Length: 262
Image 1 (spheres, helix red, strand yellow):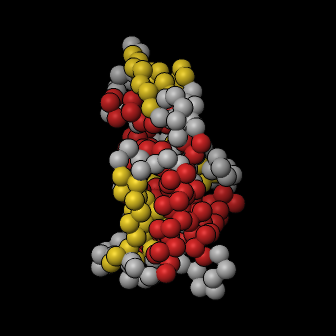
Image 2 (cartoon, rainbow, N blue to C red):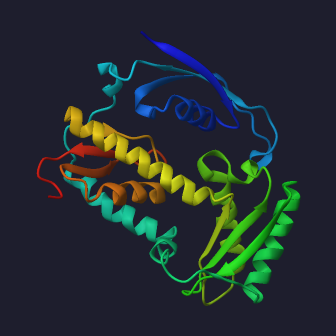
């Protein structure tokens, strides 16, 4: 028997995520009907929330595995994973590689001052009350944490606004410089929370792939998010992953591959 709940959120994805969290289900186990579209203001500020209807089956129902299936990965698609790896490197690999290094130290130099000046002005224009705190790690990467309350507006749908702010900050600070620096902007610990969420989701999907011996295709993700999923499953026995499609709708296929990673 089908059941449903209705939830709201600042974006359609946020409303869906709230429903999935409440139900304890994954995106592949439900069907979604958008009742009201979110109407964001400038850079995600203002507007009205999204409202969705999420319909689901009992956990034991076979319909739970009705997901897009890709029987095999074309050689060209598998080769594209190397491109994904390159994309990820440009989007923050250095930060992940240094996760176990010494804690970043507060930064108080010219670049840090420029980062603070730019972000302070941008946040004021966005009418967001937040303070940028800048630190630098052992590799010279600048880590910015936006400190404030109710920062959903600067995070945006699946972090899109936060990514845009990060790109603008990097462009402003590195413009005209011979030596570029990497800058990562975060708010409310969003990036680490997103990684953890993706890893949990990847594990659940891999379990289903093994149970039903069928490939499952995930929702579109950017290069960084795809890298997180690939990494999370790279050692899972009988599981392989590859990407299909083109940006911005590039997706990961979690495939049943007996003998893989053993």
